[in-house]
Length: 94
Image (cartoon, rainbow, N blue to C red; front, top):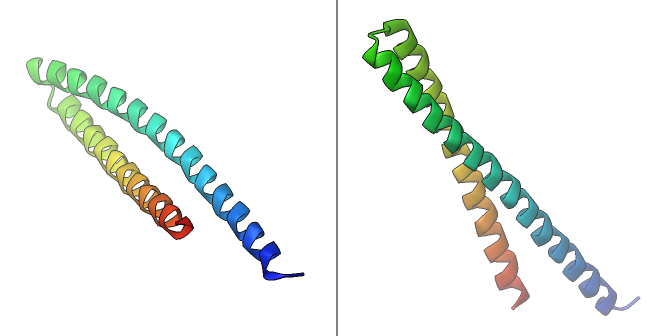
């Protein structure tokens, strides 16, 4: 077999990697959007607990907001990494 066969196989693998990166990007974006909605809900609930001077409720909501924020940051890092990977693969093709 000539090198041409390996080159074609490599291009197909690269294309599959890029397609998979796009799928993961879409899934992560959906998860991030859901988390942002949940974060908004938690902020509303936090304000309600603050108005009613429920210190235990305020602590719980602040902790949950912090956890959601950390998960959003993790997703942002993953999306950034996927974007960098896709850009590298695209540049390799050129």
